[in-house]
Image (cartoon, rainbow, N blue to C red; front, side, top):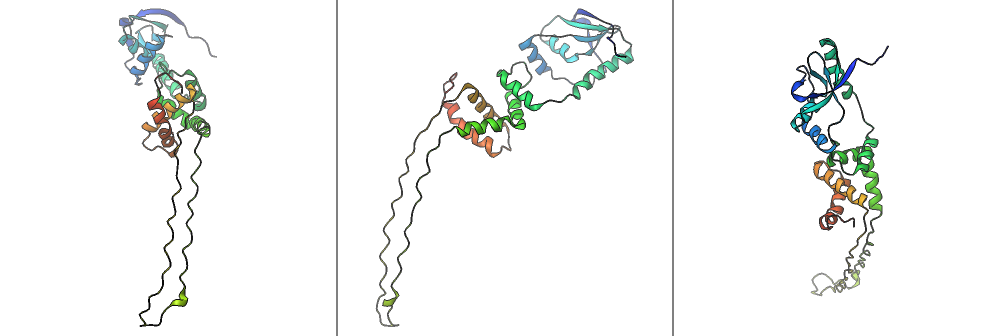
Length: 245
């Protein structure tokens, strides 16, 4: 039957703790450190009472130490070495087995706007939006709002006149065959270039920034990201910083 393990909560100086020597997990200290910078250190690391080895939170401890923290909150469990290793493995493995609802994750990150401290960057968000269909849906909706100039009228070329074969001379007579007059030159229709502009919401602007980042980072960019880059690059290059239109 499941039960709560015996444990105590303590604030412990960092120089009294040790990473577990058998920990096979390789954490991302840079990402964890960025999270601590943005969100502070929260939660606690789990340590074995008899050894002060960290069973859960080895890399959070290392990142906290690198950021200058002198103590961290701990949960102390009184277990033997075999059980300690099992806790170490279970903590890592259970995280490995987790999966994401990519659409829900993309929507959550998009709603945040500022990704600081989340561990995700603009390229991650763009990839999630594309995989979950968000980028395609939003981009298509945006492009449907873009006004377009009417196409130029088609060019009409008159048929060539037929030669009158009734005046064909006898062989050797020296008579010249009359030729048809040249067709009058057809004037090319004048095509006028009309500059169009449209207003963007802040969300649409941020979407375009994300789409451009994705297209630039994707060496096998499909037609849609390429098109978004071409349409949006001029706007984003010329719009004053901090404006939405």
